[in-house]
Image (cartoon, rainbow, N blue to C red; front, top):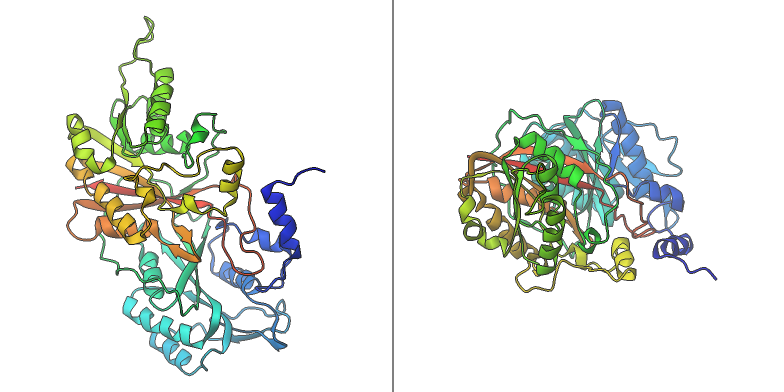
Length: 473
């Protein structure tokens, strides 16, 4: 009898589970699992998105009674069997919307979906979400749709932070357009959960600076398969992705830095683009792999006629000591591109990726080292120590130089920890000497979908990452 893979076994078991969340088939559910979608960002498309979300987050009936849905768009309800759609006119905004909600009954709605056309008064939205929480049934979902203009301050991140003072932020889904690349449509999904609301410190008015460099709003790289040594690292990012930013932010012979270089992807990319490079790595095993890779592409002794005046170096050490480790490169580094451990996400034993790595007897985490940041269990402590490292970059890099942090928000225990957004807030709030330039979304369109939590909750496959761009004053 052929042995089933973990993915196939999970799919097979999913067909047998009772669907408590919606009336969709397994295949229909799986299509919704992707955390991003490429669609045209139009006013009409909002109605299509709302329909999709209503069908996903509600059943037609609960305990024999039709589900009740509240929304603020007039959409065609012919697709919604037995559901009761209560529509707030779009013209009712701000205080009028709060007043309208205050007149609704407590715990009356199985689902609420609201499109916010303009976000400018955060204090107003605190009251709005208190009302949304009050009128929603326990453990029901609330979706907020809003548009982010990538050339402005990321006000939507601030909104998400405000919302979760009342509600549990559990997931995000984004929509991007091939034509209108400056706009990203966010769908923030919250759950009414009295026991486990995550509160965060409030967002600062971040230092935002418009850049003369026009970086893309999103990219879809197609990296080649990793080789036997590269796959030993549990979270390597592709050289093709790094090369694009190196070309954008540097010139030939510049020095490029990665303060957590893993198996040396940045150094390889930098050499491919005729840049010098230096990296810091805490794990001796990864340092050895990096050195082996660098010897192959940039050997210390070259044949006559093949001399290239580029250096590719790796320093073993803790990035928290970067000013000491990189003292000889002070004021010489033109660009840094790096990716941190995504907190303790790799310790989630249930992920499909971890199951595959376990079967291949590969490393599931970065290391067991005590001073490895990925081994910090408390999120706030991890975030503080991580951002303190980045705050040291102005001490070592050239003035006016740029750096990019590749990171994604982390789902853990039913919550969405907005790691990417919190990093921006901590680095650019106040007098840090660091300005935020904006971000590029890395869309991973080449990964198979997994039916996480099918039948019970929505846990998307997070296939988008944030490439956060900064400039040093």
